[in-house]
Length: 464
Image (cartoon, rainbow, N blue to C red; front, side, top):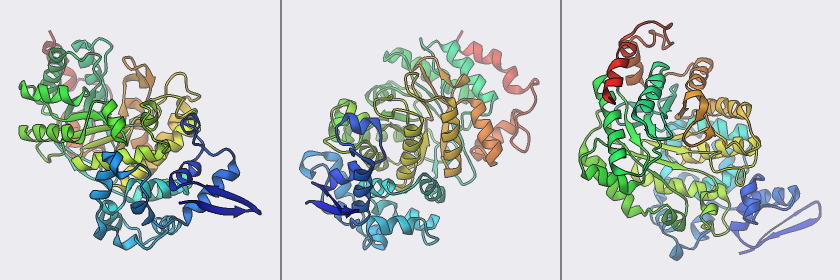
Protein backbone atom coordinates (compact mmCIF):
# COMPACT_ATOMS: atom_id res chain seq x y z
CA UNK A 1 0.00 0.00 0.00
CA UNK A 2 1.34 3.45 -0.93
CA UNK A 3 0.94 6.54 1.25
CA UNK A 4 0.94 10.11 -0.08
CA UNK A 5 0.70 13.68 1.14
CA UNK A 6 1.33 17.15 -0.30
CA UNK A 7 3.10 19.91 1.58
CA UNK A 8 3.60 23.36 0.03
CA UNK A 9 2.53 21.94 -3.34
CA UNK A 10 5.20 19.24 -3.14
CA UNK A 11 4.00 15.63 -3.33
CA UNK A 12 5.60 13.04 -1.04
CA UNK A 13 4.98 9.34 -1.61
CA UNK A 14 5.94 6.35 0.54
CA UNK A 15 5.96 2.74 -0.58
CA UNK A 16 4.74 1.17 2.65
CA UNK A 17 3.79 1.77 6.26
CA UNK A 18 7.27 0.52 7.17
CA UNK A 19 8.81 3.33 5.12
CA UNK A 20 6.45 5.91 6.62
CA UNK A 21 7.53 4.79 10.11
CA UNK A 22 11.23 4.97 9.26
CA UNK A 23 11.02 8.39 7.62
CA UNK A 24 8.92 9.79 10.46
CA UNK A 25 11.57 8.93 13.06
CA UNK A 26 13.72 11.70 14.51
CA UNK A 27 17.11 11.73 12.80
CA UNK A 28 19.57 9.18 14.17
CA UNK A 29 22.75 7.60 12.93
CA UNK A 30 21.49 4.01 13.06
CA UNK A 31 18.67 4.61 10.61
CA UNK A 32 21.03 6.39 8.23
CA UNK A 33 23.48 3.51 8.56
CA UNK A 34 20.62 1.20 7.57
CA UNK A 35 19.74 3.43 4.61
CA UNK A 36 16.18 4.06 5.79
CA UNK A 37 16.29 7.56 7.30
CA UNK A 38 14.51 10.56 5.78
CA UNK A 39 16.72 12.46 3.35
CA UNK A 40 15.46 15.89 4.39
CA UNK A 41 13.58 17.55 7.22
CA UNK A 42 10.71 18.15 4.77
CA UNK A 43 10.51 14.45 3.97
CA UNK A 44 10.52 13.63 7.68
CA UNK A 45 7.69 16.06 8.35
CA UNK A 46 5.70 14.72 5.40
CA UNK A 47 6.02 11.21 6.80
CA UNK A 48 4.74 12.46 10.17
CA UNK A 49 1.75 14.08 8.50
CA UNK A 50 0.96 10.77 6.82
CA UNK A 51 1.53 8.77 9.98
CA UNK A 52 -0.82 10.96 12.00
CA UNK A 53 -3.66 9.99 9.64
CA UNK A 54 -3.00 6.23 9.77
CA UNK A 55 -5.73 4.33 11.68
CA UNK A 56 -4.39 2.35 14.62
CA UNK A 57 -6.19 -0.68 13.18
CA UNK A 58 -3.89 -0.55 10.16
CA UNK A 59 -1.04 -1.94 12.26
CA UNK A 60 -3.08 -5.11 12.76
CA UNK A 61 -3.54 -5.47 9.00
CA UNK A 62 -0.15 -4.39 7.63
CA UNK A 63 2.70 -6.13 9.45
CA UNK A 64 6.05 -4.36 9.13
CA UNK A 65 7.76 -7.77 9.18
CA UNK A 66 5.62 -10.54 7.60
CA UNK A 67 3.68 -12.76 9.98
CA UNK A 68 4.96 -15.96 8.38
CA UNK A 69 8.61 -14.86 8.58
CA UNK A 70 9.00 -13.74 12.19
CA UNK A 71 7.91 -15.18 15.52
CA UNK A 72 7.84 -11.75 17.20
CA UNK A 73 5.28 -10.59 14.64
CA UNK A 74 3.27 -13.72 15.32
CA UNK A 75 3.25 -13.25 19.09
CA UNK A 76 2.26 -9.59 18.62
CA UNK A 77 -0.70 -10.43 16.36
CA UNK A 78 -1.77 -13.65 18.07
CA UNK A 79 -1.53 -12.13 21.53
CA UNK A 80 -3.39 -8.92 20.74
CA UNK A 81 -6.22 -8.22 23.18
CA UNK A 82 -9.08 -6.83 21.09
CA UNK A 83 -11.23 -6.07 24.12
CA UNK A 84 -8.52 -3.95 25.74
CA UNK A 85 -7.94 -2.20 22.39
CA UNK A 86 -11.61 -1.33 21.89
CA UNK A 87 -11.59 2.12 23.61
CA UNK A 88 -9.07 3.47 21.08
CA UNK A 89 -9.72 1.19 18.10
CA UNK A 90 -11.51 3.94 16.15
CA UNK A 91 -8.59 6.37 16.45
CA UNK A 92 -5.86 7.41 14.07
CA UNK A 93 -2.29 7.78 15.33
CA UNK A 94 -2.85 11.52 15.64
CA UNK A 95 -6.11 11.04 17.55
CA UNK A 96 -4.31 8.63 19.86
CA UNK A 97 -1.63 11.22 20.61
CA UNK A 98 -4.26 13.78 21.52
CA UNK A 99 -6.09 11.28 23.74
CA UNK A 100 -2.88 10.25 25.53
CA UNK A 101 -2.24 13.88 26.43
CA UNK A 102 -5.81 14.43 27.61
CA UNK A 103 -7.26 14.07 31.09
CA UNK A 104 -9.17 11.00 29.90
CA UNK A 105 -5.91 9.02 29.70
CA UNK A 106 -5.65 8.37 33.41
CA UNK A 107 -3.29 5.96 35.12
CA UNK A 108 -6.11 3.44 35.36
CA UNK A 109 -7.15 3.85 31.71
CA UNK A 110 -3.58 3.42 30.48
CA UNK A 111 -3.10 0.28 32.57
CA UNK A 112 -6.28 -1.24 31.12
CA UNK A 113 -5.18 -0.35 27.59
CA UNK A 114 -1.66 -1.84 27.69
CA UNK A 115 -2.49 -5.33 26.42
CA UNK A 116 -4.53 -3.86 23.58
CA UNK A 117 -1.60 -1.92 22.15
CA UNK A 118 0.97 -3.33 19.75
CA UNK A 119 4.59 -2.12 19.71
CA UNK A 120 4.08 -0.60 16.27
CA UNK A 121 1.17 1.50 17.56
CA UNK A 122 3.17 2.96 20.44
CA UNK A 123 6.24 3.45 18.25
CA UNK A 124 4.09 5.30 15.72
CA UNK A 125 2.54 7.71 18.20
CA UNK A 126 5.96 8.25 19.76
CA UNK A 127 7.28 9.57 16.43
CA UNK A 128 4.79 12.46 16.35
CA UNK A 129 5.35 13.51 19.96
CA UNK A 130 7.73 16.07 21.42
CA UNK A 131 10.01 15.19 24.32
CA UNK A 132 7.67 16.90 26.79
CA UNK A 133 4.77 14.81 25.44
CA UNK A 134 6.72 11.60 26.05
CA UNK A 135 7.44 12.72 29.62
CA UNK A 136 3.88 13.84 30.37
CA UNK A 137 2.31 10.57 29.22
CA UNK A 138 4.91 8.20 30.67
CA UNK A 139 4.60 9.93 34.04
CA UNK A 140 0.96 8.86 34.23
CA UNK A 141 1.80 5.16 33.80
CA UNK A 142 2.68 3.04 36.83
CA UNK A 143 3.94 -0.54 36.46
CA UNK A 144 4.57 -2.21 39.82
CA UNK A 145 6.57 -5.44 40.19
CA UNK A 146 7.79 -7.44 43.17
CA UNK A 147 10.33 -10.06 44.23
CA UNK A 148 11.85 -9.24 47.64
CA UNK A 149 10.82 -5.61 47.45
CA UNK A 150 8.38 -3.49 45.47
CA UNK A 151 9.53 -1.63 42.36
CA UNK A 152 7.69 1.06 40.41
CA UNK A 153 5.43 2.71 42.98
CA UNK A 154 4.53 6.36 42.36
CA UNK A 155 7.04 8.68 44.01
CA UNK A 156 9.74 6.01 44.17
CA UNK A 157 13.00 5.42 42.31
CA UNK A 158 15.02 2.21 42.52
CA UNK A 159 18.68 1.69 41.65
CA UNK A 160 20.50 -1.31 40.23
CA UNK A 161 23.76 -1.62 42.13
CA UNK A 162 26.27 -2.71 39.44
CA UNK A 163 29.47 -3.97 41.14
CA UNK A 164 31.32 -5.12 38.00
CA UNK A 165 34.98 -6.15 38.15
CA UNK A 166 37.32 -6.78 35.17
CA UNK A 167 38.43 -10.16 36.53
CA UNK A 168 35.33 -11.10 38.58
CA UNK A 169 37.46 -10.79 41.72
CA UNK A 170 35.18 -11.56 44.65
CA UNK A 171 36.87 -9.02 46.93
CA UNK A 172 36.48 -6.30 44.31
CA UNK A 173 32.83 -7.17 43.76
CA UNK A 174 32.23 -7.18 47.53
CA UNK A 175 33.88 -3.77 47.93
CA UNK A 176 31.73 -2.18 45.22
CA UNK A 177 28.63 -3.84 46.67
CA UNK A 178 29.38 -2.43 50.11
CA UNK A 179 30.04 1.01 48.60
CA UNK A 180 26.66 1.00 46.90
CA UNK A 181 24.73 -0.23 49.92
CA UNK A 182 26.28 2.44 52.14
CA UNK A 183 25.18 5.02 49.54
CA UNK A 184 21.61 3.70 49.71
CA UNK A 185 21.62 1.91 46.34
CA UNK A 186 20.63 -1.61 45.42
CA UNK A 187 16.87 -1.83 45.81
CA UNK A 188 16.22 -2.73 42.16
CA UNK A 189 18.85 -5.47 42.11
CA UNK A 190 22.49 -6.13 42.87
CA UNK A 191 23.26 -6.98 39.28
CA UNK A 192 26.72 -8.00 38.10
CA UNK A 193 27.93 -8.25 34.50
CA UNK A 194 30.49 -11.07 34.70
CA UNK A 195 33.70 -10.99 32.69
CA UNK A 196 33.69 -14.80 32.50
CA UNK A 197 31.29 -17.41 31.16
CA UNK A 198 32.79 -20.08 33.42
CA UNK A 199 30.02 -21.79 35.36
CA UNK A 200 32.18 -22.27 38.49
CA UNK A 201 33.03 -18.54 38.48
CA UNK A 202 29.41 -17.60 37.93
CA UNK A 203 28.36 -19.90 40.74
CA UNK A 204 30.90 -18.34 43.12
CA UNK A 205 29.60 -14.85 42.30
CA UNK A 206 26.00 -15.90 42.90
CA UNK A 207 26.84 -17.56 46.20
CA UNK A 208 28.80 -14.54 47.43
CA UNK A 209 26.01 -12.08 46.59
CA UNK A 210 23.42 -14.41 48.08
CA UNK A 211 25.38 -14.67 51.32
CA UNK A 212 25.61 -10.88 51.57
CA UNK A 213 21.85 -10.54 51.07
CA UNK A 214 21.11 -13.36 53.50
CA UNK A 215 23.57 -12.35 56.21
CA UNK A 216 22.39 -8.76 56.37
CA UNK A 217 18.74 -9.63 55.61
CA UNK A 218 18.63 -7.17 52.71
CA UNK A 219 15.22 -6.98 51.00
CA UNK A 220 16.62 -7.03 47.47
CA UNK A 221 17.60 -9.54 44.81
CA UNK A 222 20.80 -10.48 43.03
CA UNK A 223 21.47 -11.28 39.41
CA UNK A 224 24.56 -12.38 37.50
CA UNK A 225 23.91 -11.24 33.95
CA UNK A 226 25.05 -14.28 32.04
CA UNK A 227 23.33 -16.01 29.14
CA UNK A 228 19.96 -17.51 30.01
CA UNK A 229 21.15 -21.05 29.27
CA UNK A 230 23.98 -20.63 31.77
CA UNK A 231 21.47 -19.51 34.37
CA UNK A 232 19.27 -22.54 33.79
CA UNK A 233 22.30 -24.77 34.22
CA UNK A 234 23.23 -22.96 37.42
CA UNK A 235 19.68 -23.49 38.73
CA UNK A 236 19.95 -27.18 37.89
CA UNK A 237 23.27 -27.28 39.77
CA UNK A 238 21.66 -25.80 42.89
CA UNK A 239 23.02 -22.25 42.66
CA UNK A 240 21.03 -19.53 44.51
CA UNK A 241 19.48 -17.76 41.51
CA UNK A 242 17.04 -14.93 42.16
CA UNK A 243 16.52 -13.38 38.71
CA UNK A 244 17.05 -14.76 35.22
CA UNK A 245 18.69 -12.28 32.84
CA UNK A 246 18.72 -12.10 29.05
CA UNK A 247 19.34 -9.50 26.35
CA UNK A 248 16.52 -9.56 23.81
CA UNK A 249 15.63 -7.86 20.53
CA UNK A 250 12.60 -7.08 18.42
CA UNK A 251 12.92 -9.69 15.66
CA UNK A 252 13.32 -13.44 15.60
CA UNK A 253 16.66 -13.16 13.83
CA UNK A 254 17.98 -10.72 16.44
CA UNK A 255 17.09 -13.10 19.24
CA UNK A 256 18.65 -16.04 17.43
CA UNK A 257 21.86 -13.99 17.24
CA UNK A 258 21.62 -13.79 21.05
CA UNK A 259 21.09 -17.56 21.16
CA UNK A 260 17.59 -17.31 22.56
CA UNK A 261 14.00 -18.19 21.63
CA UNK A 262 10.67 -17.63 23.39
CA UNK A 263 10.68 -21.31 24.34
CA UNK A 264 14.07 -20.98 26.06
CA UNK A 265 12.86 -17.92 27.98
CA UNK A 266 9.74 -19.78 29.09
CA UNK A 267 11.83 -22.70 30.34
CA UNK A 268 14.10 -20.34 32.27
CA UNK A 269 11.21 -18.52 33.90
CA UNK A 270 9.63 -21.78 35.00
CA UNK A 271 12.97 -22.92 36.45
CA UNK A 272 13.37 -19.70 38.44
CA UNK A 273 9.77 -19.80 39.68
CA UNK A 274 10.31 -23.34 40.92
CA UNK A 275 12.91 -22.05 43.42
CA UNK A 276 10.31 -19.87 45.17
CA UNK A 277 12.95 -17.39 46.37
CA UNK A 278 10.76 -14.29 46.25
CA UNK A 279 9.21 -13.04 49.47
CA UNK A 280 6.73 -10.38 48.29
CA UNK A 281 6.25 -11.41 44.65
CA UNK A 282 7.30 -13.74 41.85
CA UNK A 283 8.54 -11.48 39.05
CA UNK A 284 11.75 -13.38 38.26
CA UNK A 285 12.92 -12.10 34.86
CA UNK A 286 15.31 -9.27 34.00
CA UNK A 287 15.64 -8.16 30.37
CA UNK A 288 17.94 -5.66 28.69
CA UNK A 289 17.37 -4.04 25.31
CA UNK A 290 18.82 -1.23 23.22
CA UNK A 291 18.14 0.64 20.01
CA UNK A 292 20.43 -0.67 17.28
CA UNK A 293 20.66 -4.30 18.36
CA UNK A 294 18.57 -5.52 15.41
CA UNK A 295 20.65 -3.63 12.86
CA UNK A 296 23.91 -4.79 14.43
CA UNK A 297 22.68 -8.38 13.92
CA UNK A 298 21.63 -7.61 10.31
CA UNK A 299 18.12 -8.44 11.47
CA UNK A 300 16.09 -5.22 11.19
CA UNK A 301 14.43 -6.05 7.82
CA UNK A 302 14.20 -2.37 6.90
CA UNK A 303 12.36 -1.45 10.10
CA UNK A 304 13.64 1.63 11.96
CA UNK A 305 15.55 1.02 15.17
CA UNK A 306 13.05 2.65 17.50
CA UNK A 307 10.25 0.39 16.25
CA UNK A 308 12.51 -2.67 16.52
CA UNK A 309 13.19 -1.67 20.11
CA UNK A 310 9.47 -1.40 20.90
CA UNK A 311 8.93 -4.85 19.39
CA UNK A 312 11.40 -6.27 21.93
CA UNK A 313 9.04 -5.07 24.66
CA UNK A 314 6.27 -7.26 23.26
CA UNK A 315 8.50 -10.27 23.87
CA UNK A 316 9.50 -9.08 27.35
CA UNK A 317 5.97 -8.62 28.61
CA UNK A 318 5.12 -12.28 28.00
CA UNK A 319 7.27 -13.19 31.00
CA UNK A 320 6.10 -10.63 33.59
CA UNK A 321 9.61 -9.33 34.34
CA UNK A 322 10.70 -7.59 37.51
CA UNK A 323 12.92 -5.24 35.51
CA UNK A 324 13.39 -4.19 31.87
CA UNK A 325 16.37 -1.98 31.16
CA UNK A 326 17.06 -0.03 28.00
CA UNK A 327 20.85 0.34 27.83
CA UNK A 328 20.29 3.40 25.75
CA UNK A 329 23.74 4.65 24.71
CA UNK A 330 25.75 1.48 25.16
CA UNK A 331 25.76 0.14 21.60
CA UNK A 332 27.61 3.21 20.36
CA UNK A 333 27.51 6.27 18.08
CA UNK A 334 26.91 4.13 15.00
CA UNK A 335 23.31 3.92 16.26
CA UNK A 336 22.90 6.96 18.52
CA UNK A 337 25.49 9.50 17.49
CA UNK A 338 25.43 12.20 20.13
CA UNK A 339 23.86 13.39 23.35
CA UNK A 340 20.75 14.71 21.62
CA UNK A 341 20.03 11.36 19.97
CA UNK A 342 20.70 9.44 23.20
CA UNK A 343 18.37 11.72 25.17
CA UNK A 344 15.56 11.33 22.66
CA UNK A 345 16.01 7.56 22.48
CA UNK A 346 15.92 7.22 26.26
CA UNK A 347 12.63 9.10 26.46
CA UNK A 348 11.20 7.07 23.55
CA UNK A 349 12.12 3.73 25.09
CA UNK A 350 10.72 4.65 28.49
CA UNK A 351 7.47 5.93 26.97
CA UNK A 352 6.96 2.88 24.73
CA UNK A 353 7.83 0.34 27.40
CA UNK A 354 5.54 1.91 29.97
CA UNK A 355 2.60 2.10 27.54
CA UNK A 356 3.06 -1.60 26.80
CA UNK A 357 2.90 -2.39 30.51
CA UNK A 358 6.56 -2.93 31.35
CA UNK A 359 8.63 -1.81 34.37
CA UNK A 360 11.08 0.30 32.36
CA UNK A 361 14.40 1.43 33.71
CA UNK A 362 17.27 3.02 31.83
CA UNK A 363 21.03 2.71 31.86
CA UNK A 364 21.66 6.39 31.18
CA UNK A 365 24.97 5.90 29.44
CA UNK A 366 27.35 6.56 26.57
CA UNK A 367 30.50 5.02 25.16
CA UNK A 368 33.73 6.95 25.17
CA UNK A 369 33.72 7.43 21.38
CA UNK A 370 30.22 8.98 21.26
CA UNK A 371 29.67 12.71 20.87
CA UNK A 372 28.24 12.91 24.38
CA UNK A 373 29.37 13.73 27.89
CA UNK A 374 28.18 13.56 31.49
CA UNK A 375 26.21 16.80 31.12
CA UNK A 376 24.06 15.03 28.53
CA UNK A 377 23.53 12.18 30.97
CA UNK A 378 22.56 14.65 33.71
CA UNK A 379 19.93 16.05 31.36
CA UNK A 380 18.49 12.64 30.54
CA UNK A 381 18.63 11.65 34.22
CA UNK A 382 16.44 14.59 35.23
CA UNK A 383 14.06 14.14 32.28
CA UNK A 384 13.55 10.45 33.06
CA UNK A 385 13.09 11.28 36.73
CA UNK A 386 10.30 13.67 35.73
CA UNK A 387 8.86 10.94 33.49
CA UNK A 388 8.60 8.46 36.38
CA UNK A 389 11.43 6.06 35.54
CA UNK A 390 11.27 2.84 37.58
CA UNK A 391 15.02 2.43 38.12
CA UNK A 392 18.44 3.63 37.02
CA UNK A 393 22.01 2.32 37.34
CA UNK A 394 24.34 2.86 40.27
CA UNK A 395 28.01 2.37 39.34
CA UNK A 396 31.05 3.44 41.40
CA UNK A 397 32.09 6.83 40.02
CA UNK A 398 29.68 6.34 37.05
CA UNK A 399 32.59 4.62 35.25
CA UNK A 400 32.24 0.89 34.63
CA UNK A 401 35.73 -0.62 34.92
CA UNK A 402 34.74 -3.89 33.25
CA UNK A 403 32.47 -2.78 30.39
CA UNK A 404 34.41 0.49 29.82
CA UNK A 405 31.51 2.90 29.40
CA UNK A 406 30.06 5.85 31.31
CA UNK A 407 26.79 5.61 33.22
CA UNK A 408 25.29 7.00 36.44
CA UNK A 409 26.70 6.79 39.94
CA UNK A 410 25.35 6.23 43.44
CA UNK A 411 25.66 10.00 43.92
CA UNK A 412 23.52 10.66 40.84
CA UNK A 413 20.72 8.62 42.39
CA UNK A 414 20.99 10.62 45.62
CA UNK A 415 20.79 13.85 43.59
CA UNK A 416 17.69 12.75 41.68
CA UNK A 417 15.92 11.51 44.79
CA UNK A 418 16.70 14.77 46.57
CA UNK A 419 15.50 17.22 43.91
CA UNK A 420 12.37 15.21 43.07
CA UNK A 421 11.57 13.89 46.55
CA UNK A 422 11.72 10.26 45.41
CA UNK A 423 11.83 7.37 47.85
CA UNK A 424 13.46 3.96 47.53
CA UNK A 425 11.52 0.70 47.42
CA UNK A 426 9.64 0.75 50.75
CA UNK A 427 11.07 -2.52 52.07
CA UNK A 428 14.61 -1.42 51.22
CA UNK A 429 14.03 2.03 52.74
CA UNK A 430 13.02 0.44 56.02
CA UNK A 431 16.10 -1.78 55.96
CA UNK A 432 18.42 1.22 55.44
CA UNK A 433 16.84 2.94 58.43
CA UNK A 434 17.10 -0.18 60.55
CA UNK A 435 20.80 -0.47 59.64
CA UNK A 436 21.26 3.24 60.49
CA UNK A 437 22.48 4.02 56.98
CA UNK A 438 19.68 6.56 56.47
CA UNK A 439 17.56 8.64 58.81
CA UNK A 440 13.77 8.59 59.04
CA UNK A 441 13.54 10.95 56.04
CA UNK A 442 15.63 8.64 53.86
CA UNK A 443 18.74 10.86 53.91
CA UNK A 444 22.17 9.30 54.33
CA UNK A 445 23.51 9.68 57.84
CA UNK A 446 26.90 11.37 58.31
CA UNK A 447 29.85 8.92 58.23
CA UNK A 448 29.91 7.01 61.49
CA UNK A 449 30.09 3.42 62.65
CA UNK A 450 26.96 1.52 61.73
CA UNK A 451 26.07 -2.18 61.63
CA UNK A 452 26.79 -2.61 57.95
CA UNK A 453 30.09 -0.72 58.02
CA UNK A 454 31.06 -2.70 61.07
CA UNK A 455 30.18 -5.77 59.07
CA UNK A 456 32.81 -5.00 56.42
CA UNK A 457 35.03 -7.55 58.09
CA UNK A 458 32.22 -10.07 57.61
CA UNK A 459 32.02 -9.14 53.95
CA UNK A 460 35.73 -9.69 53.59
CA UNK A 461 35.42 -13.05 55.31
CA UNK A 462 32.92 -14.10 52.66
CA UNK A 463 35.64 -14.00 50.01
CA UNK A 464 38.63 -15.03 52.08
